[in-house]
Length: 114
Length: 112
Image 1 (cartoon, rainbow over the protein chains, first blue to last red):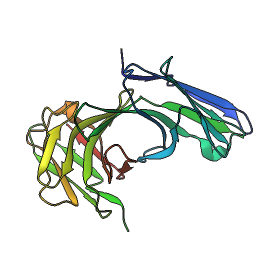
Image 2: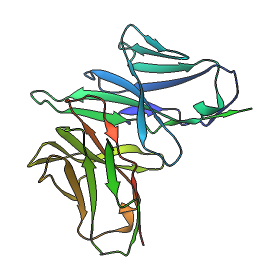
Image 3: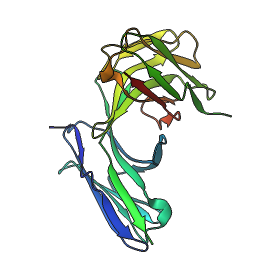
């Protein structure tokens, strides 16, 4: 089983739609959670961190369920510019080390069309 | 402030050839990382460094070596390239353990 699993999609939605991505992780000791965005043939960039209480950044809402080891990202009022691959990322600090290992999901492809 | 830069951007090698990928960051970050990204696999950590003069193995270190002689530079070497090393290589850095990682633009490597 992969440490971080995402539905690869692709998701094809019209402008203005609401779309949700899900992610599950296997390491219950994972400590921090993120969504990164990657445009075609570009580097990943941090979209937002994910907090236990849930958090929102404009049209984007992230949720974390530690009991179910499940992370989600909701995008409201989709724009053409939201077309990208969305990477679910989980951080785990091995005991006694200061290094935080990031584990990436394989990404979910989103295409927003007119 | 250029952030994280990588050279070269593209490279084609023949099996058995060697090369070095250079990563440079101007943010005074302590931590630096090398990843590879393959279709359907996500990013996988090759090697990382927690400071100048230190390196450690990541998830997929075989066939690669690294060096961090200067804080701002992190080099990834392939001593004898194999077709299985065809991939996109990303370098990243962060100032804090587990903090936001800033990625370079990537190097697309093809090994024939």
